[in-house]
Length: 120
Length: 144
Image 1 (cartoon, each protein chain N blue to C red):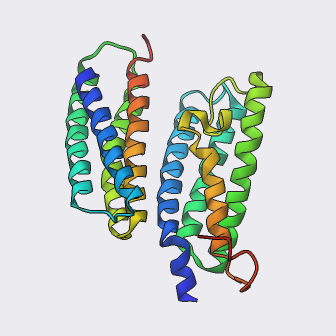
Image 2: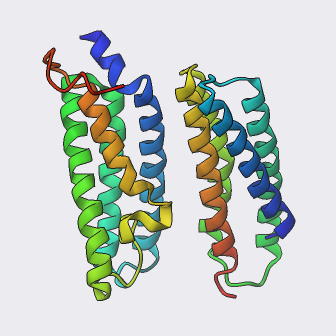
């Protein structure tokens, strides 16, 4: 797993989380800036999915391939599902849901790192 | 009671549904992998993972279902969840040999940012808030 892609995803998640928490405290509903932040994370996750799949195919490490791929796909899905659910609740609840989605991505990222370095 | 149906899965209930949904998927995935790869290694821990998955699935669907039945089912599921996370959390510290591998509820959900411990309390608070009978005076006043 490329540490730069991994680091970028985590940094983007942290930035989005700060943005969401600030707007949550201000009692703001979900808005464009939130979805842009999530979109940027999504692009990074798609890069990670491709990168991770290629890395998995070319590695000779002892990695649980199926599990890793399911995590990579789950991370891609989490922001999308979160965004759709958040859109149905245009209040600070929606903002909270986006925050939960970002936290889910971050949690999955840590698992992905552990899976990739399981044999180290 | 259409408005009641809406209430259980709308507002903060929607955030709860999302959180329970995430845990339902996470716990199901985990238990399937654990049971599929090496079921014999930690039968108790893996069955508990499966139990947790089922509980989260029931909680998610019953919240979405709404109505009296949904509320009751959700109350049972969240109650069992609370007992489970407290019992497994305590046991995983007290009797380490019982848990050679982790479950969602081990160490009070440490591997999941302690969210498994917070979630049932949030669930109970929400269920209390959306009680179907809703007697006018009692217990409603202290909610924000």
